[in-house]
Length: 200
Image (cartoon, rainbow, N blue to C red):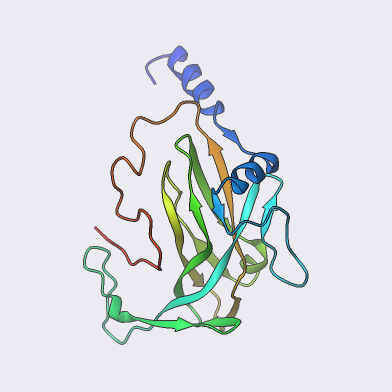
């Protein structure tokens, strides 16, 4: 920053972003931002999903791509080899191998408003089992099923339950509407309907 005034402006600009509450999420979910949409938190012996105080717990679907490398294989994001993954349609649950990962998708289809950016964090139920869920931000006007990487950092297999909660999405409203949205720039992961491998 050039001077104190620039710093103060930057802080104020940052603080103008707001986390959206449950009431807003319910209103937007009912208008099609999230489909299918659970307006309340669902538990009943499941890993919970649905609306929480300041977020939405999305579910993991029953479709997976399991990473199955052989010796000497390499994952290169610029030259992605989809043959290193085995497609699985799970019946109720899937076991993630030790120190490995699977690609998965959300049950929900998201449509993000132009003035919103999301961040996503794995649920603590799975975190306590050594599971890390990696999901990048949903950019303004992005839409699609969420492709996620779910890693098992433990030395033993971990069971993952289909159609139950996997991660919480937090919606951040920007202080100004962006000049260029994800839809405007025709992002490569726009409107994805399946688990999508890395693209350049």
